[in-house]
Amino acid sequence: MPHRSSAMAAAIVPVSPLTVGVSTLEDTLAVHLADMQPDNARALIETIGVMAQACARISHLASQGVLGGAHGLAHNHNSQGEAQKKLDVLADEAMSNALEKCRHVAGWASEEHEHPTVSYDHGTQGRYLAVFDPLDGSSNIEANISIGTIFSLLPHPYRGTTPGEMGFMQPGHQQIAAGYVLYGPATIMVLTCRRGVLMFTLDRSAPAAEGQARWVLTQESVTIAPHTREFAINTSNQRFWEKPVQRYVAECMAGESGPRMKDFNMRWVASMVAEVHRIMTRGGVFLYPRDTREPVKPGRLRLMYEAAPMALLVEQAGGKGSTGTSDLLDIVPDALHQRAPVMLGSREEINRIVGYHEDPNENVSMQLFKTRSLFVQPQA
Ligand code: AFP
Image 1 (tube, rainbow, N blue to C red):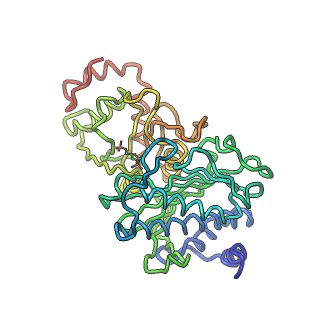
Image 2 (cartoon, rainbow, N blue to C red):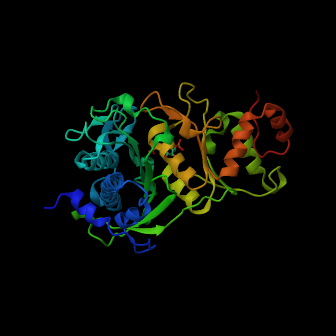
């Protein structure tokens, strides 16, 4: 059997122009990364290919529904104390098993495990550290609503030694690549290697079970419009939000008769992958702000598994990601499972929300606006 790397090397020369609807993942990346040093490009293509293959496997498991035996609880808890679903566990295994075989990956961190895993065979020589949320939106599984996988590649900072937890503590702007796979009516991968954003659709008629998943390029240069009339937030937490978010949402809700002078639409899928994908296709903002429900947690979403990869994708598509007070990509994690407030999407809207955080007269504006808001603002 040929070694996978030699098969990849053959696949990346000669390059041909990208053709949407025809170019496969490997062919597309060979063209897309043509400016990279060939050895680096080959390693990146091979590693993304390995993760894409694992996601095709997860797509297959998810698409089987209850017939595949992947519904329901696994009767385990993850490192965060959250009850794991069977599909959480299976997705985690699919990603881990794939990365274990990849010679470029020295180690990986999964949202499902307390500590990172060092690759048995490639721990010292691998050039990347992989980080992933194997199954995002797991509360949606039994309801047959979209779910996803989020992944990111960081450089292994101490190549030649095995990676420790400290090696993963890198800010989001260090990411070499980031992507997500949406398991919806179609399975779609959205990927950035810091050269814009590409979108691929899994050809489900190809035999994924034999490791032959076929991802077809379906959009190049994915771009998020700077303005939007759509926002996504879990409004059941409204009373816990910080004031600038209260103000932003209240103004959207006030619609034409409020200061924004236009009507807004709202969505909430409870799967960040699905929300970000909607933003990638038609704009919008996604907010999971800091709130006062659990003061020790600065938000619900994980910085490394969710916020940072999505922020890179959004930024590469022309949008912006922020905590409200700082750029999501600038945060240096101090713990693997660190949480962060997340606001991302259409650039001008995120700038507006950041502006509200900076506004020293915030409380004054809130009082003025109170008369027109559909929300009753909580008393200070
Ligand atoms: P699960 O994977 O535990 O279902 O969490 C999904 C998620 O991290 C993110 O994808 C959603 O946007 C968010 O949590 C939903 O949170 P709420 O249930 O609080 O709305």
